[in-house]
Amino acid sequence: MCGVVGIISSRPVNQEIYDALTVLQHRGQDSAGIMTDNKGVLCLRKSNGLVNDVFSSEHMTRLRGNMGIGHVRYPTAGTLSSSEAQPFYVNSPFGICLAHNGNLVNNDELRKHLSEVDRRHLNTESDTEALLNLFAHELQENFDGTLSPETIFNAATQLFDRCSGGYAVVSMILNEGLVAMRDPNGIRPLILGKREVGQGTEYMIASESVALDIADFEIVRDVRPGEAIYITKEGELFSKQCVKPKSYTPCIFEFVYFARPDSIIDGMSVYKSRLRMGEYLAQKIIKQGLHHDVDVVIPIPDTSRSTALQVAHHLGVKYREGFIKNRYIGRTFIMPGQEIRKKSVKQKLNPIDLEIRDKNVLLIDDSIVRGTTSKKIIQMARNTGAKKVFFASAAPPVKYPNVYGIDMPSTAELLASNRTEEELARYIGADWLIYQELDDLISAVQFDESDAEAFDTSCFSGEYVTGDVTSNYLDFIESKRNDAAKAKKEIERKQIDIQDQSSMTVS
Image 1 (cartoon, rainbow, N blue to C red):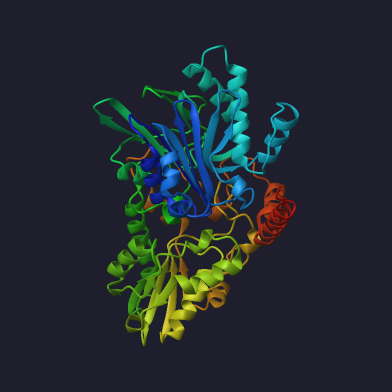
Image 2 (cartoon, rainbow, N blue to C red):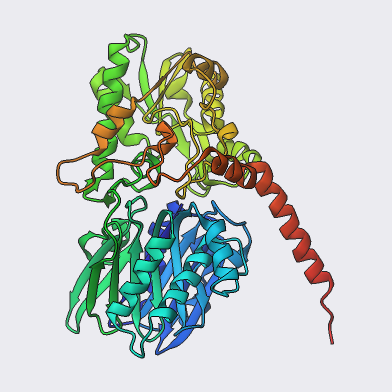
């Protein structure tokens, strides 16, 4: 999962892109990058780390220009190397920058064709680099002497035809304008905003509406599945439905965990969705007669607060904050490596004795993926003196890999993949465990005003909307992207870095 932003303005965009990336930081904590266009000259800063660590005042002053794109990353494909920090850039044709959120199912096939047929050189394993080179190649093929909107839309059409997966793209063509594209299934979110100023209309494209809010852009609409938008440097906007949408199925896990609660995605409020998750979850708890022993409802901060409030309200028991979160520790689910995740849980949360001791505690979390956080927190509650610890998940069991840009590649690392609910409860140490029903989750998220037809629920249901995810492919990505494989890649990368440093000479 990543966060992207692009802005065309009548004034410098460096600070507003930076601000947008800070409110999208929850979507990726591995690296950050900004590219701006200063009258046809590329200005770039990207590196591993959080936004406020990557960009200093000196860096910001060098990011000149009234047009630019930005990115925050956590890697699902490729490695943790800073060489794979986005945006990426190619100088032919025109000079093109690109950042993307998502994952290409056919990345390896696409890379092979780009290398052997299109003769495009690729330096990394990143599917973003493949997307960039594909877009550049198709622009070159369709260029007839003028970079018209039709040229760009023809190139986008070819990109849609050749790519499979979930992706939301922002691209900058130097001295020309911005391009935005969203996959034909609308899996990954992308929203368009505008701001009226004295000099005309300014535009922003971002992963979530909160990025628009912070810069006082108003929401225009979500980018439609299979649509491309082109905004010239002068602020003229063109759009085209380049391919017929295959479906309109946004990722439901955005609403469960990833997106900020104050975001609107495809016309649906994340906050309201999480409130409704609590209502449905409470109904299930009551139906099963499990509510009688509950003394207090406590959320696992932060994403489950809205859900927990509604659970407590409908159960008629107290809602309390039982854990204090250290704001300087990242989200454990998106941290690389199981050992790091285990260590960070204790650093991230500290229990409040007053709210837990001698009570039957119902803990509410957004989901259970690997079970690391759940197991540790339940043990913390018991060590603090809880009589009984119950656990409820606002989402159904995560049983299957997510291949569209969320770091769930390995079935073996998913706690619920081969366990019953009773086994899961014993494993995490809960007196009882209850999950949200998938139909209830869908009902909680789906509002009448949305154009979304359904949702990508693949991590819960095992049904992949692109229709080309086979068991062989799942085995392949598991071998490449499980924690052990990532750890091996990281060791190899560090060894290369050491060799490079040792080979350097001082003249």
